[in-house]
Image (cartoon, one colour):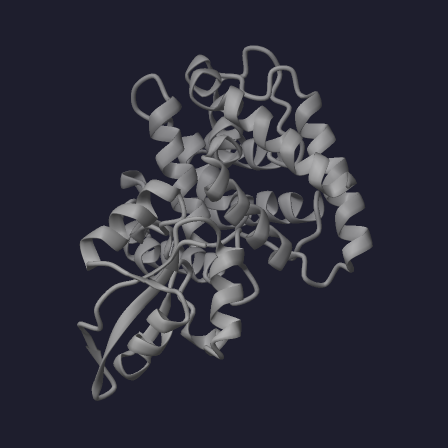
Length: 291
């Protein structure tokens, strides 16, 4: 077991708080917290906030006392660290300044989209996903990201009810409606076309815009295993309305579809960055589902 706790130095609510983490797995952290009677409300994505009065008790229970710097270093090295960019409150503020320059004056449109991406029923398909896709676009694009591709990222999950295919179609129609009159018709049509592509992630050969968007949307698949596992857990929450049997069958179908894409990533940069780890992650998850 490698549950760590730093000194209670963080002031709040009339006391100070320590951070309780695991540098092995969240499952280990949650099991330790449950055995110690810590409230689920104390969990904040990668750690539990622990009041000073319980610090010594948790050390006696087996938590390893370390400095704050050591705790962060080991958590980051484990891949379990949730960065600021993965937190919706930070992502939303960052996205406000990432709004495309040609629509800079359309703040009401920007804020409507941010409100959609911040809906409470979203767990993976939220503002952190949008920010991650925009970041991935910068990594795979050969030069500036084309405006239709950037806007397609903003709209691709703007409607999200957990209904594959229908969500992408509704998002494309929303783009057509909200962008009409703001941009040339051919640009609006291209944005909507790209949004619809994210239902299957099968851009045609030579479709540079489609390759960019699809690769960026699937970049998470090539994450380090702990980050990938967090992604899967958040997607499962998005589909909380689906029972476990249907989830496993549906998710296995999705994984087989992704593994059948040849190649999974269409841009040279995407293939170099994510193809190998994504294939390993998808096969590992599929094996787990079939056990």
